[in-house]
Image 1 (cartoon, one colour):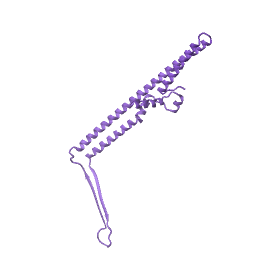
Image 2 (spheres, helix red, strand yellow):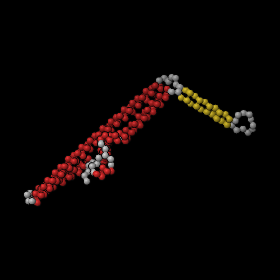
Image 3 (spheres, helix red, strand yellow):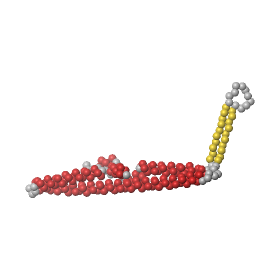
Image 4 (cartoon, helix red, strand yellow):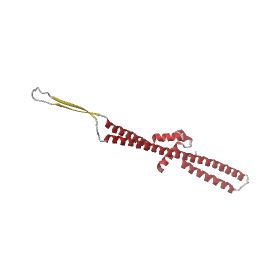
Length: 208
């Protein structure tokens, strides 16, 4: 479950990457488009859909026990003789049968009932798979948006720290504060930038 969730997060992160180059190279999806894309291409959903189709085919096969069926067989034989004869040199025979079950002891009705249950189970599994994949995509999408919002908030904080550093440098140049104030402000900016890169990497959002 964790690996699937991580894979979804990576896909959404790539689709929503913040740089201009990424936006030009890849399409951008909103949450409903991401859900629709997952429902269309997710391998587990596709497999579940195939199982529904197979169950319906099994129902058609079981129900055919109520219908008559036609069978045919034939024989053709050609003889070669060394002398002339009035007998036919070719023998052929054809048989066509039309048959229908009159009584099967409930076998056909049981097979039909089982086939109907298989269809219901396959449909239930399909809906469960769609719901689970949809939930995973929505959670991953919203977490990605939350992480990107955190990055933007931190970017704003870095901007404030950089303005403070600039102000301390100006005050130092004017002789108002000592060098220690400038070094302390520079350290805060450096740590903030390092934390921003860490958060950006975790959320799939990168600054140019």
